[in-house]
Structures are given as structure tokens and as C-alpha cells.
Amino acid sequence: MKRNGIGALAGHIARAIWPLALLLPILAFASGRVPKPVIDIDKPGKCVEDTATMRREHPDMLRHQRDLTVHEGIRTRQHSLKECVSCHASTKTGSVLGEKGFCQSCHDYASVKLDCFSCHASKPKGAAGAKP
Amino acid sequence: MNADANDRLSRRGFLAISAATLGGVMLAPGIRLIEIAAARAPEQAVSRRVRWGLLIDTNICTPGCDDCVKACATENGIKDTGRPRTDPQWIRKLELNDRRSGRTHSVPVMCQHCEHPPCVDVCPTGASFKRADGIVLVDKHICIGCRYCMMACPYKARSIVFEDVTDQNPDVPRGKGTAEGCTLCVHRVDRDRQPACVEACAKAGHNAMIFGDLNDPQSEIAQRVAKYASTQIRADLRLNPGVRYQGL
Ligand code: SF4
Ligand code: SF4
Image (cartoon, rainbow over all chains, first blue to last red; front, side, top):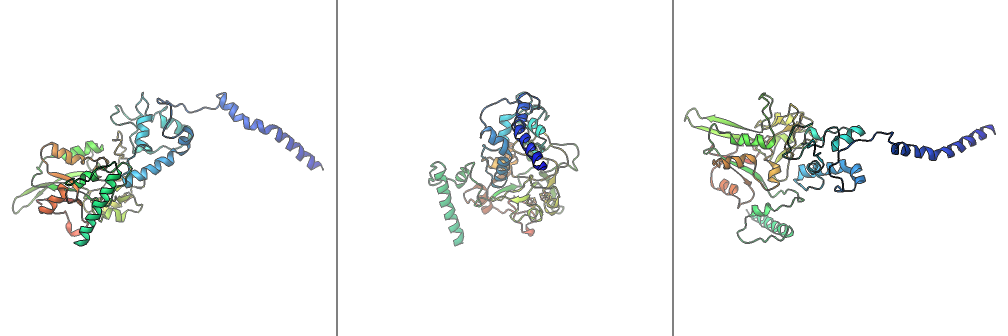
């Protein structure tokens, strides 16, 4: 009996606060308490896919494209890293790296290692200046 | 012989179809197959029907000239760090001397793009591979830098990158810890251009190197190979390199 009473009470409390628990991160995010990555986006607008798809799937797209390019000589531009770089390089640094760089800012934020650019150019062809 | 002729016929047929589907290019009489092969669309995979090769005329190649080596370095972003023992080397000039006759040759040597490449046989990861059109490459995404390929290559054509690389050519990704070698400027070939060394040699007026499709009987390289004596270095190994030399 007693046990049941406590259980029921706990259930009531849980039911009362769960919407709050759901809302909290949203409130916190909206109020700016959670730091977000600061990204210099020079060319806002539509990428080759919509933003949500790009955020989630760009690694898979790049991996797929890299195999096609390296092994089969297919050099279409749509999902090529070279095209990402030429479109997203910052006009200030000329690069997708750097603190506010398109690639690095987000990867730093998410703590995801970004090793593409130990081999690939982080700047479009002909861009001047040293690699940041 | 018959099989050869059949193969050639079906190849013409295939190319005619692919050319037609690629935008209505007419297969007119006298049109060179290389021009049709050149019409490979960016989304079309490389074909087994093509075998890229180089023919180097050592009678023309001048001792002391390193135009091809310089062009290669510029194109592929290979910088002189002042440490030649560890710098990657994609192409080098060798001076050969016949002591008896006193005749000297000067030959550029790069990856010979073997038909049966030992570098591919030994690679434990599958990073070293031969493309359908005969170009032998390293997939640096997969390479673990073990250097077996360097040991296996009889031409010393592979290098390992010892130091961080910066300011790469966007078309030629290169980085520390991976094996590499001459790619026949695959990024140019895929866009219908000549390798940088061949272009530089021609630009300087030497014309000691020609590049082309060894499988295409109409191409200059195939016709020269059919007409004049040419050799492969260490032909006794029977790796059938795609790079051939005249006058050795
Ligand atoms: S020359 Fe060496 S690196 Fe090039 S394909 Fe032959 S074995 Fe491989
Ligand atoms: S160094 Fe790389 S390409 Fe060469 S054998 Fe090892 S894994 Fe293969």
C-alpha cells in the first residue's frame, strides 16, 4: 500500500515535469546560454542539398565521392571536396580552416577530428597566403 | 589475330554508342579514336579499353635538362625541403654511360605503370591499385604508410611523405605518412590534358616524350611503338610497364 502511494506520487511528479525537461534545452539554447559555433558563412543559401541533409550526411557523400574519383576517375563536381572548399572558403582567410572557418569551427565545436586537410588543400586553387 | 580484330570492332562499336549517347558526336570516317575517348563524360568511369602509356625518346632527351622534373614538382606540389634523402621523388633524370662505346643516355624515370605491378601485389591494405586504364595509384585514404610498395617496386618509383605538406594543389592531395608516386597526372588525364612533364618537354621544344593510349591503333604513341624499336626497362621482369623508351 505504502509503496504504491510513493510510486503514484513519483509518477505524478514525473508527469508534471517532463514537458519542462523537454523544454529546458530549447529555452537554454534560445536564451544563448549554450555556446554555438561561430561560423563565417560568406555564401548563405542552398548547398547541393538542404542544410539538414548536409549536416547529417556530408561525410557519407564525401566518402562515396572519394571512392568514385580515386578508383574510377569520376570527377563530377557536385559532391567533391574541392567544390566544397571553393564555395565555402572564407573571403577573409581564403580557407575553410581557421577559428571561424566553415569546416573547422563546427568540427571543433562538435569535437570531431577533421583530417581531410592534412592532405587536401583547404583553399581554392590560386588562393594566396599561408594555410592557417 | 581474329580475336584482336573482333575486339577492335566491338570497341569501335562501343565507342560509337557511347559517343552518340554523350551528345550526338558523329563517328565520321577518319575521326581519331582518342578524340572519342577524350569525350568521356565526367560521370563516366575509366575504361579497360584504354591503356595509357608514355614513350620517351632517349636520343632526343638532353643530358642536364630537367624541365620535366621541374614541371612535375610544380604541378604536384613537391617542394625541395633541402633534405633530398627524404624528399619524395616522382620523376628523376638518370645519366647512363656505356663505357665501351662512350655513348651517354639521359633518361627520365618515373613510375612505369606496370600491367602486373608488384607494388599492388604486396600492399596489405589495397591502397596501391591499378586503375582500369592502366594508371597505378595509391589511395591515400587507405594507405597506412607501411612502405611495402617501396620495397617491392623494381624501379624505385615510390616515395613516402616524411613531412607535413602544406599548400597542396587542390587536384593533387598529398600528406604525411602515405606512399606516393607518379600518377601520370591522372587529374589532368581525366580532363583530357597531357601530363605536366610531357607538356613541359614539348613546350621547351624537345618533344622527347609522348603520352597516349597504347591500345588505340590510331594514336601517335601506338603508331610509333608499332613502327620503331622501343624497350621497357627491366623487361625481363615481365611486368609490362606502360612507359617505354626509344634508343636505350
Ligand atoms: S613502377 Fe613501381 S610503383 Fe609503378 S606500377 Fe611498377 S611496381 Fe608499381
Ligand atoms: S605504403 Fe601504403 S600503398 Fe604502400 S604497401 Fe603500404 S599501405 Fe600499400
